[in-house]
Image 1 (cartoon, one colour):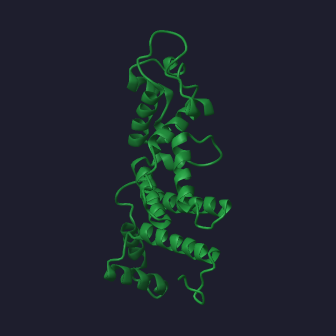
Image 2: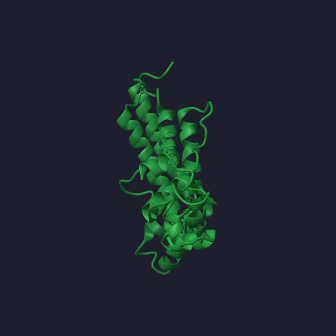
Image 3: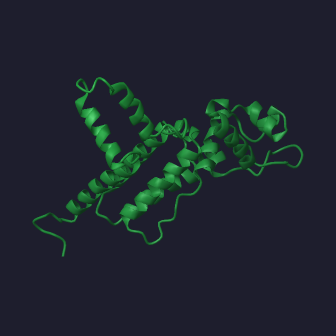
Amino acid sequence: MDKLLWEPSPGPRRGPRPAFTVDDIARAAIAIADADGLGAVTMQRVADRLGVTKMALYRYVPGKAELVALMLDLGLGDPPARGDKGWRAALDAWSRALFEEFAAHPWAIEAAVGARVMGPNELGWLEEAVAALTGTGLDGSEMLDVAVTLVGHVRSLAQQTAGSPADTEAALDEAIAGLIQGREDRFPALAAAIAEARAGGKQDQALDFGLARILDGVGTLIAHRAGVTPAHPAP
Protein backbone atom coordinates (compact mmCIF):
# COMPACT_ATOMS: atom_id res chain seq x y z
CA MET A 1 0.00 0.00 0.00
CA ASP A 2 2.82 2.42 0.79
CA LYS A 3 4.12 2.16 -2.78
CA LEU A 4 0.67 3.01 -4.13
CA LEU A 5 0.49 6.08 -1.87
CA TRP A 6 4.05 7.25 -2.24
CA GLU A 7 4.98 6.08 -5.72
CA PRO A 8 1.70 6.00 -7.65
CA SER A 9 1.82 4.32 -11.00
CA PRO A 10 0.63 6.37 -13.98
CA GLY A 11 -1.61 3.45 -14.95
CA PRO A 12 -1.78 -0.31 -15.28
CA ARG A 13 1.30 -2.17 -16.37
CA ARG A 14 -0.47 -3.98 -19.19
CA GLY A 15 -3.29 -3.41 -21.65
CA PRO A 16 -4.23 -0.35 -23.68
CA ARG A 17 -3.25 3.20 -22.87
CA PRO A 18 -5.04 4.14 -19.60
CA ALA A 19 -8.11 6.32 -19.92
CA PHE A 20 -7.86 7.50 -16.30
CA THR A 21 -5.42 7.64 -13.39
CA VAL A 22 -5.33 6.42 -9.80
CA ASP A 23 -6.30 9.94 -8.74
CA ASP A 24 -9.33 9.78 -11.03
CA ILE A 25 -10.41 6.61 -9.24
CA ALA A 26 -9.92 8.22 -5.83
CA ARG A 27 -11.87 11.31 -6.88
CA ALA A 28 -14.77 9.17 -8.09
CA ALA A 29 -14.78 7.31 -4.77
CA ILE A 30 -14.63 10.60 -2.83
CA ALA A 31 -17.70 11.87 -4.69
CA ILE A 32 -19.61 8.73 -3.67
CA ALA A 33 -18.44 8.95 -0.04
CA ASP A 34 -19.27 12.67 0.19
CA ALA A 35 -22.81 11.94 -0.98
CA ASP A 36 -23.57 8.61 0.70
CA GLY A 37 -20.85 7.82 3.24
CA LEU A 38 -17.81 5.57 3.27
CA GLY A 39 -19.89 2.41 3.45
CA ALA A 40 -21.39 3.22 0.06
CA VAL A 41 -18.00 3.10 -1.63
CA THR A 42 -17.52 -0.17 -3.49
CA MET A 43 -15.30 -1.04 -6.40
CA GLN A 44 -18.43 -1.66 -8.45
CA ARG A 45 -19.91 1.77 -7.76
CA VAL A 46 -16.63 3.48 -8.53
CA ALA A 47 -16.34 1.49 -11.75
CA ASP A 48 -19.89 2.45 -12.72
CA ARG A 49 -19.12 6.11 -12.09
CA LEU A 50 -16.06 5.91 -14.33
CA GLY A 51 -17.85 3.88 -16.97
CA VAL A 52 -15.56 0.86 -16.77
CA THR A 53 -15.74 -2.68 -15.44
CA LYS A 54 -14.90 -3.47 -11.84
CA MET A 55 -12.08 -5.72 -12.97
CA ALA A 56 -10.52 -2.77 -14.81
CA LEU A 57 -10.10 -0.95 -11.49
CA TYR A 58 -8.12 -3.80 -9.97
CA ARG A 59 -5.39 -3.14 -12.51
CA TYR A 60 -4.89 0.21 -10.74
CA VAL A 61 -5.98 -0.38 -7.11
CA PRO A 62 -5.79 -3.80 -5.39
CA GLY A 63 -8.88 -3.34 -3.21
CA LYS A 64 -11.04 -1.11 -1.04
CA ALA A 65 -8.51 -0.69 1.80
CA GLU A 66 -6.01 0.76 -0.64
CA LEU A 67 -8.73 2.86 -2.26
CA VAL A 68 -9.75 4.37 1.10
CA ALA A 69 -6.11 5.24 1.85
CA LEU A 70 -5.88 7.03 -1.50
CA MET A 71 -9.20 8.79 -0.87
CA LEU A 72 -8.09 10.05 2.53
CA ASP A 73 -4.79 11.42 1.30
CA LEU A 74 -6.33 13.09 -1.74
CA GLY A 75 -9.31 14.37 0.26
CA LEU A 76 -7.14 16.02 2.92
CA GLY A 77 -5.00 17.74 0.32
CA ASP A 78 -2.12 19.99 1.28
CA PRO A 79 -1.95 21.63 4.73
CA PRO A 80 -2.13 25.42 4.94
CA ALA A 81 1.18 27.24 4.58
CA ARG A 82 2.52 28.66 7.83
CA GLY A 83 4.03 31.74 6.24
CA ASP A 84 5.55 33.96 8.91
CA LYS A 85 2.94 33.17 11.55
CA GLY A 86 4.05 32.45 15.08
CA TRP A 87 3.47 28.99 16.50
CA ARG A 88 0.08 29.83 18.04
CA ALA A 89 -1.43 31.53 14.98
CA ALA A 90 -0.04 28.77 12.76
CA LEU A 91 -1.57 25.98 14.86
CA ASP A 92 -4.89 27.81 15.15
CA ALA A 93 -5.08 28.19 11.35
CA TRP A 94 -3.90 24.58 10.91
CA SER A 95 -6.62 23.25 13.22
CA ARG A 96 -9.38 25.27 11.56
CA ALA A 97 -8.26 24.15 8.10
CA LEU A 98 -8.31 20.52 9.26
CA PHE A 99 -11.80 21.04 10.67
CA GLU A 100 -12.95 22.35 7.28
CA GLU A 101 -11.54 19.26 5.53
CA PHE A 102 -13.33 16.92 7.93
CA ALA A 103 -16.53 18.96 7.55
CA ALA A 104 -16.28 18.74 3.75
CA HIS A 105 -15.52 15.00 3.85
CA PRO A 106 -17.20 13.50 6.97
CA TRP A 107 -16.19 9.99 5.91
CA ALA A 108 -12.55 10.99 6.49
CA ILE A 109 -13.23 11.01 10.25
CA GLU A 110 -13.92 7.28 10.03
CA ALA A 111 -11.06 6.62 7.63
CA ALA A 112 -8.38 8.45 9.62
CA VAL A 113 -8.26 6.07 12.58
CA GLY A 114 -6.02 3.27 13.71
CA ALA A 115 -2.60 2.13 12.61
CA ARG A 116 -2.27 2.54 8.86
CA VAL A 117 0.09 3.71 6.17
CA MET A 118 -0.13 7.49 5.88
CA GLY A 119 0.15 9.19 2.54
CA PRO A 120 2.31 12.24 1.74
CA ASN A 121 -0.52 14.74 2.27
CA GLU A 122 -1.58 13.36 5.64
CA LEU A 123 2.04 13.21 6.79
CA GLY A 124 2.48 16.73 5.46
CA TRP A 125 -0.22 17.96 7.86
CA LEU A 126 1.68 16.44 10.77
CA GLU A 127 4.92 17.93 9.48
CA GLU A 128 3.41 21.43 9.45
CA ALA A 129 2.13 21.14 13.02
CA VAL A 130 5.48 19.93 14.33
CA ALA A 131 7.37 22.52 12.27
CA ALA A 132 5.25 25.29 13.80
CA LEU A 133 6.45 24.21 17.26
CA THR A 134 10.09 23.73 16.31
CA GLY A 135 12.28 26.10 18.28
CA THR A 136 9.73 26.66 21.05
CA GLY A 137 11.64 24.55 23.55
CA LEU A 138 9.25 21.60 23.45
CA ASP A 139 10.77 18.21 22.84
CA GLY A 140 9.77 15.88 20.03
CA SER A 141 7.32 13.89 22.12
CA GLU A 142 5.58 17.04 23.33
CA MET A 143 5.29 18.49 19.83
CA LEU A 144 3.70 15.28 18.57
CA ASP A 145 1.35 15.21 21.56
CA VAL A 146 0.23 18.78 20.84
CA ALA A 147 -0.62 17.78 17.27
CA VAL A 148 -2.53 14.69 18.44
CA THR A 149 -4.46 16.73 21.02
CA LEU A 150 -5.48 19.31 18.41
CA VAL A 151 -6.54 16.59 15.97
CA GLY A 152 -8.63 14.97 18.70
CA HIS A 153 -10.47 18.20 19.43
CA VAL A 154 -11.06 18.93 15.75
CA ARG A 155 -12.23 15.37 15.01
CA SER A 156 -14.63 15.41 17.95
CA LEU A 157 -16.31 18.65 16.88
CA ALA A 158 -16.38 17.66 13.21
CA GLN A 159 -17.96 14.32 14.11
CA GLN A 160 -20.72 16.04 16.09
CA THR A 161 -21.66 18.19 13.10
CA ALA A 162 -21.11 15.56 10.40
CA GLY A 163 -24.71 14.42 10.04
CA SER A 164 -26.40 17.70 9.24
CA PRO A 165 -25.91 21.45 9.53
CA ALA A 166 -28.55 21.29 12.26
CA ASP A 167 -26.28 19.08 14.39
CA THR A 168 -24.70 22.06 16.14
CA GLU A 169 -24.11 23.05 19.73
CA ALA A 170 -27.18 25.28 19.59
CA ALA A 171 -29.31 22.37 18.35
CA LEU A 172 -27.96 20.17 21.14
CA ASP A 173 -28.73 22.89 23.67
CA GLU A 174 -32.28 23.08 22.33
CA ALA A 175 -32.71 19.34 22.75
CA ILE A 176 -31.32 19.41 26.28
CA ALA A 177 -33.43 22.45 27.18
CA GLY A 178 -36.54 20.60 26.02
CA LEU A 179 -35.72 17.67 28.28
CA ILE A 180 -34.95 19.92 31.25
CA GLN A 181 -38.13 21.97 30.93
CA GLY A 182 -40.25 21.25 33.97
CA ARG A 183 -37.33 19.38 35.58
CA GLU A 184 -35.14 22.37 36.45
CA ASP A 185 -35.05 21.36 40.10
CA ARG A 186 -33.41 18.07 39.11
CA PHE A 187 -30.88 19.63 36.70
CA PRO A 188 -30.33 23.14 38.07
CA ALA A 189 -26.75 23.55 36.88
CA LEU A 190 -27.58 22.55 33.30
CA ALA A 191 -30.65 24.77 33.23
CA ALA A 192 -28.67 27.77 34.46
CA ALA A 193 -25.78 27.17 32.05
CA ILE A 194 -28.01 26.87 28.99
CA ALA A 195 -30.00 29.95 29.97
CA GLU A 196 -26.79 31.96 30.43
CA ALA A 197 -25.35 30.74 27.11
CA ARG A 198 -28.54 31.76 25.31
CA ALA A 199 -28.63 35.16 26.97
CA GLY A 200 -24.99 35.85 26.11
CA GLY A 201 -25.19 34.50 22.57
CA LYS A 202 -22.32 32.14 23.37
CA GLN A 203 -23.49 29.01 21.57
CA ASP A 204 -21.64 27.14 18.82
CA GLN A 205 -18.26 28.24 20.15
CA ALA A 206 -16.90 24.86 21.16
CA LEU A 207 -14.26 24.82 18.42
CA ASP A 208 -13.00 28.29 19.33
CA PHE A 209 -13.12 27.63 23.06
CA GLY A 210 -11.32 24.30 22.86
CA LEU A 211 -8.58 25.59 20.55
CA ALA A 212 -7.99 28.60 22.78
CA ARG A 213 -7.71 26.50 25.93
CA ILE A 214 -5.42 23.89 24.31
CA LEU A 215 -3.15 26.59 22.92
CA ASP A 216 -3.20 28.44 26.24
CA GLY A 217 -1.88 25.28 27.85
CA VAL A 218 0.78 24.85 25.18
CA GLY A 219 1.82 28.48 25.72
CA THR A 220 2.15 27.88 29.46
CA LEU A 221 4.35 24.84 28.79
CA ILE A 222 6.52 26.78 26.34
CA ALA A 223 6.91 29.58 28.87
CA HIS A 224 7.85 27.01 31.52
CA ARG A 225 10.51 25.54 29.23
CA ALA A 226 11.91 29.03 28.75
CA GLY A 227 11.96 29.64 32.49
CA VAL A 228 9.32 32.34 32.27
CA THR A 229 7.14 32.47 35.39
CA PRO A 230 5.02 35.18 37.00
CA ALA A 231 7.99 35.82 39.32
CA HIS A 232 10.40 36.01 36.37
CA PRO A 233 8.53 37.61 33.48
CA ALA A 234 10.05 37.77 30.05
CA PRO A 235 12.04 40.95 29.39
